Length: 232
Image (cartoon, rainbow, N blue to C red):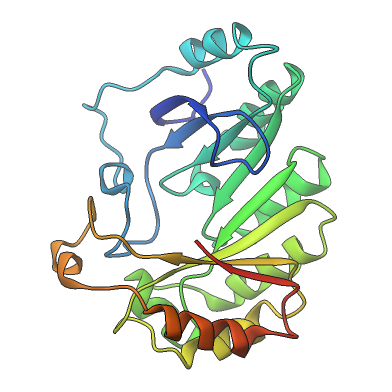
Protein backbone atom coordinates (compact mmCIF):
# COMPACT_ATOMS: atom_id res chain seq x y z
CA UNK A 1 0.00 0.00 0.00
CA UNK A 2 1.27 3.47 -0.90
CA UNK A 3 2.46 5.56 2.05
CA UNK A 4 1.01 8.98 1.22
CA UNK A 5 -1.09 10.94 3.70
CA UNK A 6 -3.81 13.06 2.12
CA UNK A 7 -5.17 15.70 4.48
CA UNK A 8 -7.67 17.22 2.08
CA UNK A 9 -8.74 17.69 -1.52
CA UNK A 10 -9.97 20.76 -3.37
CA UNK A 11 -11.55 19.42 -6.52
CA UNK A 12 -11.14 22.54 -8.66
CA UNK A 13 -8.95 25.65 -8.51
CA UNK A 14 -8.35 28.37 -11.08
CA UNK A 15 -5.75 30.17 -8.93
CA UNK A 16 -3.17 27.75 -7.60
CA UNK A 17 -1.62 26.56 -10.87
CA UNK A 18 -0.97 29.62 -13.08
CA UNK A 19 -2.98 29.42 -16.27
CA UNK A 20 -4.35 25.95 -15.51
CA UNK A 21 -7.45 24.34 -14.05
CA UNK A 22 -6.26 22.05 -11.26
CA UNK A 23 -7.26 19.94 -8.31
CA UNK A 24 -5.34 20.52 -5.07
CA UNK A 25 -4.12 17.66 -2.89
CA UNK A 26 -3.16 18.67 0.66
CA UNK A 27 -0.63 16.46 2.43
CA UNK A 28 -0.40 15.88 6.18
CA UNK A 29 2.64 16.74 8.25
CA UNK A 30 5.31 19.43 8.12
CA UNK A 31 8.88 19.76 9.42
CA UNK A 32 8.46 23.54 9.91
CA UNK A 33 6.21 25.27 12.46
CA UNK A 34 5.71 28.71 10.93
CA UNK A 35 3.37 30.70 13.18
CA UNK A 36 1.51 32.20 10.21
CA UNK A 37 0.84 28.82 8.55
CA UNK A 38 -2.58 29.03 6.88
CA UNK A 39 -3.10 25.25 6.94
CA UNK A 40 -2.50 24.60 10.66
CA UNK A 41 -4.67 21.47 10.66
CA UNK A 42 -2.13 19.86 8.31
CA UNK A 43 0.97 20.73 10.34
CA UNK A 44 0.95 17.52 12.32
CA UNK A 45 -0.08 14.05 11.23
CA UNK A 46 -3.54 13.26 12.58
CA UNK A 47 -4.54 9.65 11.98
CA UNK A 48 -8.02 10.33 13.40
CA UNK A 49 -8.80 13.04 10.85
CA UNK A 50 -11.07 11.78 8.04
CA UNK A 51 -9.02 12.01 4.85
CA UNK A 52 -9.16 10.97 1.24
CA UNK A 53 -7.57 7.61 0.67
CA UNK A 54 -5.10 7.29 -2.19
CA UNK A 55 -7.37 4.90 -4.15
CA UNK A 56 -10.32 7.30 -3.73
CA UNK A 57 -8.21 10.19 -5.00
CA UNK A 58 -7.15 8.33 -8.13
CA UNK A 59 -10.71 7.25 -8.78
CA UNK A 60 -11.70 10.91 -8.61
CA UNK A 61 -8.84 11.92 -10.89
CA UNK A 62 -9.70 9.34 -13.56
CA UNK A 63 -13.16 10.87 -13.75
CA UNK A 64 -11.69 14.35 -14.27
CA UNK A 65 -9.79 13.55 -17.46
CA UNK A 66 -10.47 16.32 -19.96
CA UNK A 67 -11.86 18.58 -17.24
CA UNK A 68 -8.67 19.31 -15.30
CA UNK A 69 -5.25 20.28 -16.63
CA UNK A 70 -3.26 19.31 -13.60
CA UNK A 71 -2.83 18.58 -9.92
CA UNK A 72 -1.26 20.83 -7.29
CA UNK A 73 0.39 18.94 -4.41
CA UNK A 74 0.75 21.13 -1.35
CA UNK A 75 0.85 20.76 2.42
CA UNK A 76 1.99 20.50 5.03
CA UNK A 77 5.34 19.78 3.46
CA UNK A 78 5.03 17.61 0.39
CA UNK A 79 8.62 16.37 0.23
CA UNK A 80 8.45 14.49 3.55
CA UNK A 81 5.86 12.09 2.10
CA UNK A 82 7.49 8.67 1.78
CA UNK A 83 5.90 7.68 -1.55
CA UNK A 84 5.71 11.13 -3.14
CA UNK A 85 7.54 10.00 -6.28
CA UNK A 86 5.20 7.05 -6.80
CA UNK A 87 2.15 9.24 -6.17
CA UNK A 88 3.28 11.80 -8.76
CA UNK A 89 4.22 9.07 -11.24
CA UNK A 90 0.67 7.74 -11.15
CA UNK A 91 -0.75 11.24 -11.70
CA UNK A 92 1.54 11.71 -14.70
CA UNK A 93 0.50 8.32 -16.11
CA UNK A 94 -3.06 9.65 -16.26
CA UNK A 95 -1.88 12.58 -18.37
CA UNK A 96 -2.07 15.41 -15.85
CA UNK A 97 0.43 18.20 -15.21
CA UNK A 98 1.90 18.39 -11.69
CA UNK A 99 2.72 21.49 -9.64
CA UNK A 100 4.59 20.89 -6.39
CA UNK A 101 4.65 23.31 -3.44
CA UNK A 102 7.59 22.91 -1.06
CA UNK A 103 9.55 24.63 1.71
CA UNK A 104 12.81 23.50 0.10
CA UNK A 105 14.08 21.50 3.06
CA UNK A 106 14.57 18.31 1.01
CA UNK A 107 16.73 19.19 -2.02
CA UNK A 108 17.53 15.54 -2.66
CA UNK A 109 13.83 14.80 -3.16
CA UNK A 110 13.41 17.78 -5.49
CA UNK A 111 16.46 16.76 -7.51
CA UNK A 112 15.15 13.21 -7.96
CA UNK A 113 11.68 14.36 -9.03
CA UNK A 114 13.09 16.88 -11.49
CA UNK A 115 15.61 14.47 -13.04
CA UNK A 116 12.79 11.94 -13.42
CA UNK A 117 10.74 14.46 -15.42
CA UNK A 118 7.85 14.36 -12.96
CA UNK A 119 7.36 18.08 -12.24
CA UNK A 120 5.86 20.73 -14.50
CA UNK A 121 5.84 23.64 -12.03
CA UNK A 122 7.52 24.21 -8.66
CA UNK A 123 6.61 26.81 -6.03
CA UNK A 124 9.08 27.20 -3.17
CA UNK A 125 8.38 29.29 -0.11
CA UNK A 126 11.26 31.50 0.96
CA UNK A 127 10.67 32.10 4.65
CA UNK A 128 13.31 34.73 5.37
CA UNK A 129 16.93 35.67 4.74
CA UNK A 130 19.10 32.74 5.82
CA UNK A 131 20.08 34.47 9.07
CA UNK A 132 16.44 34.45 10.23
CA UNK A 133 15.30 31.12 8.77
CA UNK A 134 15.21 29.09 11.99
CA UNK A 135 13.48 31.91 13.83
CA UNK A 136 10.71 32.34 11.23
CA UNK A 137 10.23 28.61 10.53
CA UNK A 138 10.31 27.78 14.28
CA UNK A 139 12.49 24.80 13.42
CA UNK A 140 16.13 23.77 13.25
CA UNK A 141 16.51 24.46 9.52
CA UNK A 142 19.61 23.40 7.61
CA UNK A 143 20.00 26.56 5.53
CA UNK A 144 22.54 24.87 3.25
CA UNK A 145 19.67 22.67 2.07
CA UNK A 146 17.54 25.75 1.44
CA UNK A 147 20.33 27.21 -0.70
CA UNK A 148 20.71 23.91 -2.55
CA UNK A 149 16.98 23.72 -3.31
CA UNK A 150 17.03 27.27 -4.70
CA UNK A 151 19.97 26.38 -6.93
CA UNK A 152 18.31 23.15 -8.12
CA UNK A 153 15.04 24.91 -8.96
CA UNK A 154 16.65 27.83 -10.80
CA UNK A 155 18.70 25.43 -12.93
CA UNK A 156 15.96 22.83 -13.38
CA UNK A 157 14.47 23.91 -16.69
CA UNK A 158 11.07 23.51 -15.00
CA UNK A 159 8.71 26.46 -14.67
CA UNK A 160 8.87 27.82 -11.11
CA UNK A 161 8.25 30.62 -8.67
CA UNK A 162 9.56 31.67 -5.28
CA UNK A 163 7.31 33.42 -2.78
CA UNK A 164 7.43 34.97 0.68
CA UNK A 165 4.61 35.76 3.08
CA UNK A 166 5.40 39.31 4.19
CA UNK A 167 4.70 39.94 7.88
CA UNK A 168 5.76 43.22 9.44
CA UNK A 169 7.87 42.74 12.55
CA UNK A 170 8.82 39.20 11.67
CA UNK A 171 10.64 40.56 8.64
CA UNK A 172 11.99 44.07 8.06
CA UNK A 173 12.04 45.81 4.69
CA UNK A 174 15.82 45.46 4.64
CA UNK A 175 15.58 41.66 5.06
CA UNK A 176 14.46 41.38 1.47
CA UNK A 177 17.94 42.38 0.35
CA UNK A 178 19.15 39.11 1.86
CA UNK A 179 16.31 37.19 0.22
CA UNK A 180 17.25 38.81 -3.09
CA UNK A 181 20.80 37.54 -2.69
CA UNK A 182 19.51 34.04 -1.89
CA UNK A 183 17.37 33.79 -5.05
CA UNK A 184 19.43 36.07 -7.31
CA UNK A 185 18.84 35.23 -10.95
CA UNK A 186 15.37 33.79 -10.35
CA UNK A 187 12.63 34.34 -12.92
CA UNK A 188 9.62 34.94 -10.65
CA UNK A 189 9.26 36.05 -7.03
CA UNK A 190 5.98 36.89 -5.33
CA UNK A 191 5.49 38.92 -2.16
CA UNK A 192 2.36 37.60 -0.51
CA UNK A 193 0.35 39.94 1.67
CA UNK A 194 -0.33 38.45 5.10
CA UNK A 195 -4.01 38.16 5.95
CA UNK A 196 -4.50 36.84 9.52
CA UNK A 197 -7.33 34.31 9.44
CA UNK A 198 -6.72 30.61 10.12
CA UNK A 199 -3.16 30.33 11.50
CA UNK A 200 -0.98 28.07 13.62
CA UNK A 201 0.00 30.65 16.25
CA UNK A 202 -2.86 32.90 17.37
CA UNK A 203 -0.44 35.68 18.34
CA UNK A 204 -0.17 36.32 14.59
CA UNK A 205 -3.77 37.53 14.57
CA UNK A 206 -2.36 40.87 15.75
CA UNK A 207 0.33 41.09 13.08
CA UNK A 208 0.10 43.06 9.85
CA UNK A 209 1.56 42.97 6.38
CA UNK A 210 3.63 45.76 4.85
CA UNK A 211 2.16 48.99 3.49
CA UNK A 212 2.01 49.68 -0.24
CA UNK A 213 4.92 52.10 0.04
CA UNK A 214 7.00 49.49 1.89
CA UNK A 215 6.21 46.89 -0.76
CA UNK A 216 7.37 49.40 -3.38
CA UNK A 217 10.67 49.80 -1.54
CA UNK A 218 11.08 46.02 -1.42
CA UNK A 219 10.41 45.69 -5.14
CA UNK A 220 13.03 48.38 -5.78
CA UNK A 221 15.56 46.46 -3.66
CA UNK A 222 15.07 43.41 -5.85
CA UNK A 223 15.17 45.05 -9.28
CA UNK A 224 18.05 43.70 -11.30
CA UNK A 225 18.37 40.55 -9.21
CA UNK A 226 15.09 38.88 -10.19
CA UNK A 227 13.27 39.06 -13.54
CA UNK A 228 9.75 39.47 -12.15
CA UNK A 229 8.86 40.71 -8.66
CA UNK A 230 5.17 41.13 -7.88
CA UNK A 231 2.90 41.63 -4.88
CA UNK A 232 -0.17 39.46 -4.44
